[in-house]
Image 1 (cartoon, each protein chain N blue to C red):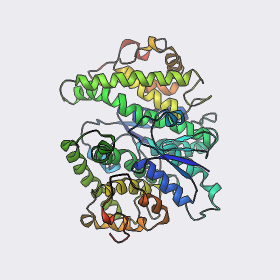
Image 2 (image 1 turned 30 degrees about the vertical axis):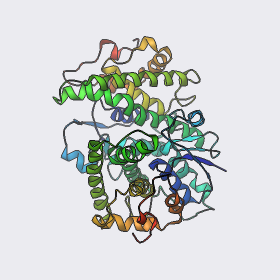
Image 3 (image 1 turned 180 degrees about the vertical axis):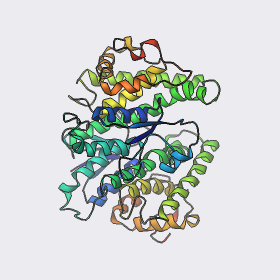
Image 4 (image 1 turned 135 degrees about the vertical axis):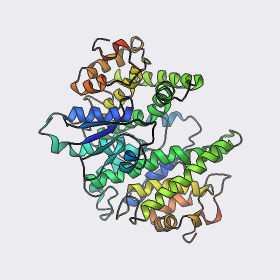
Length: 229
Length: 229
């Protein structure tokens, strides 16, 4: 069975977990602490980063880009599992739009906001790295407001972030937002379009393992797993 | 004809220029200053980032991920131009390796070293942003040494960074290194394997437009365009 090296509050790990869940692929989780240098992980992925998936292709697949594209390519072979599911759909231009929005969340959103907030609030706490830096928190929160406005703009035009069907882009965005929701940083009442979109995603079976995961000593807010939040 | 919004010393722009050159696709260059907010660019790409390519697909293609995968997908349609060229080759596992190494250079190398050095040395100069920060320069240079060691390690095992044939991964890496070479930050004599690899790439026709580009008031070192450097 494939094994996914991941961390419960790593947005890239969550992105891949969601894709695997949508495709109906069974896998084991190798929970990994990203703030500790891990020789076993580095032997699989020289970058030392998550996620990594082994026992799926001939070699370990490393990083959200390689894994997500691999899973999109092998989807036809998996059609017997979930015949209706195609997360990178449409013609080349539509696929370009899905990849544009996916990169927005995996790279830009992550750099601008979730990596700042998760590092300061969660990873510093878990690794004994001291108090959060207030200036970094303020930057991350300001950037979050801008990104949520852009999501609202997209969702006012179409039901999903990159078009008429759910795609990798929605899973990339939900992976980021779910981590920030875990640390109580999403004010849902201020963003009704985003809340309605997230509500649709949250009720999908692929979200259940992700929402059930906990990081010791850092519980999420009470509404975190509620489908009516 | 397709138009590529790019900046001469943006590694992501260079990556796409090299792919277009390898595939033999004609295009026009829309030279763009990344340190100036550009309404026309933002109308094409809400992220406001480079590269963007218009008049190729039905919609603008934004960002190195979407553009490179688009070009890899349409390569079969371009086969009449360069029948021998496939930059994302092999089975799904081999393609996973090409994407792993591509992401290494586009994201990790860029974040660890080239964005630091290019921002401090070049963009601050061009935008009137003051003197380079010495601590940031030192970090970028230390990280560069580490990344060059990893390249040496890969090239001691195989002729190209992700296998037996030239691939997107080599172009992603060369795009980064060529920018740092422009600002005199590659000590070629210390890295013979990397130098030999870069020498093979530098003589390819796809490199000519990139090596000919200049940024006003900031000339490259004399050996920058030499094939024997």
